[in-house]
Image 1 (cartoon, rainbow, N blue to C red):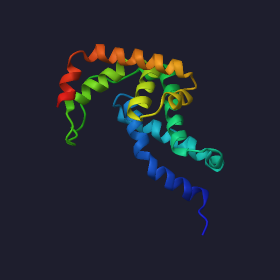
Image 2: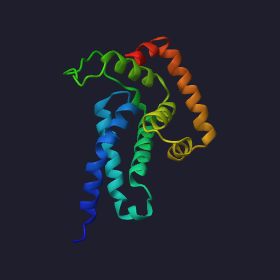
Image 3: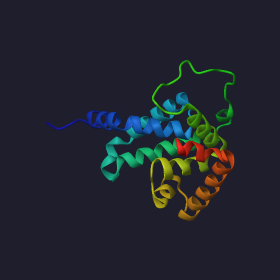
Image 4: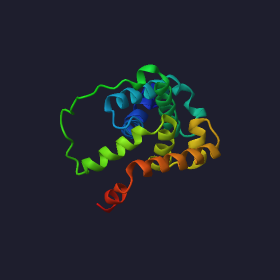
Length: 169
């Protein structure tokens, strides 16, 4: 029995949603609501072109690229810089991670410009090569290397000596 287009997409979306959401959380510096929106928008765009998926060699990597581009488009909007202040989270996740490390890293990521943050997430979280990152961002490999160096320098400067403390835990 042949699967329908919708069934194939549902299988793909079920398998990739978690990974897309985790990447979106890192891109948005922990803003889970925006990450959910970006993930949904990415899946919507993927569904719209799912009929042409046979021409896409690696749909999972393409979905990641769509996510990054969607994030960068969102960052260009004026409303992207608006953030509510003074709100506490409803609950604290108890997943065995160190909250101080998570907050410090998310704050440091948030301080980076959107493109630098995208490069760091793709290169070091998604473990993509320089060339794959350059393709995803429509830029040259040299620009990716430059952004990586600059972004890592900013992260080191922002985290200072505390990064060694976090790594030792």
